[in-house]
Image 1 (tube, rainbow over the protein chains, first blue to last red):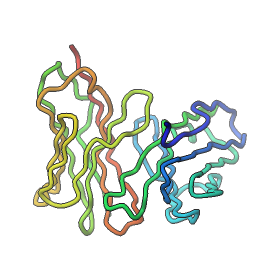
Image 2 (cartoon, chains in turn red, blue):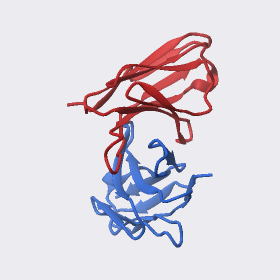
Image 3 (cartoon, rainbow over the protein chains, first blue to last red):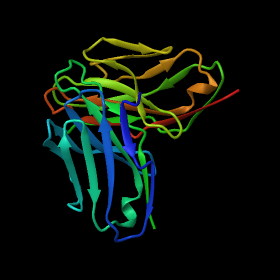
Image 4 (cartoon, one colour):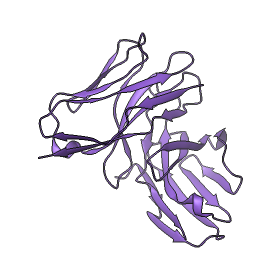
Length: 114
Length: 113
């Protein structure tokens, strides 16, 4: 069974478009994250939600808007896409009350903006 | 601030060679330390972790020891296999910091037969 799933796996779109990436976890975790991995593999956190509440919001353009309809889902909507948004976006989840707080990652969504 | 520095790759080794990937960190408080691995085309997987000084994390033949005096968490394996080819990320989590992971830049390992 897939623990953290993301759709779509690949997304190719034109500059200026609006797109969404969806993430779902079936681990019963209460915390979810979005990370961005650039072309050099550098991985940086963007957002985190705990029990549907935004708890981490790094310096990310406000064109990026996360939405958590429930604890098992965290979607990422991106408005007015730019070339620099091309990257792999990873969703992750964890249980905040666990001692080690291991984060489980999804397979990633490769976004290409043309 | 909190940060992680890893040795630059790529690291290229022959099968059965000894592997070391260096990782040092800067952190406030007492962080937990992690190594994640990313195989080609996949997401990250936790490889091993250590939550306090002198702890040794180990998994699949990989080991890393939390050294507070040198602020290091170097990854080692005695005999690498072709299947170990991947990108390895060192990361830290500062206690009480909303579980935010801070990653190093990643080190690509290529193992040849």
